[in-house]
Image 1 (tube, rainbow, N blue to C red):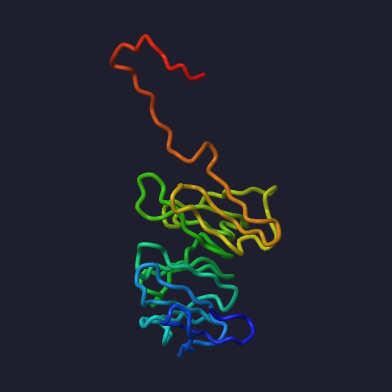
Image 2: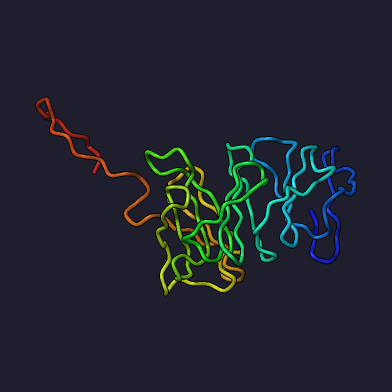
Length: 216
């Protein structure tokens, strides 16, 4: 992985026992892997998005335009090859074609980080979590419909320095989110009211038993 002092992007095919420099990608680029295709890797540097299809040995620019120039964090969604979400100073961007093109979400004016969690009941697309600015308000948000609408999940009394440097949802529990605070630990939060959908009580169809458990 590259660092922040002119370090090149490198790759290994020997379980980390030896490393070689990747070609076609600038030093200090942000690198992420596709979550389905083990040979596909992505990189971003200074407004340009790159893709590798040979395990990171070589990268090429996808030609995508309109992306932020810096301060970018991006992630590929589990279970969907080529599905990428990119957060930056000018908003939140989504690609479904391995970064060949991105669509900017009109309701997000700036993004710090983005993450994924278990899909809401009845939904097949994973929940999105965003640290950023939606409709002029900066906070932490969740979307259960691929970014069409957002629900703020923090408030003005729960804000942190460098909020969103680390951000992810829980893949097993809908609504649970983990947030790195850069000095105040890693926080997690659940939806108000619990983590499961409410159930409707049913009327018993048989006579209740006359004995009960001895447990208190």
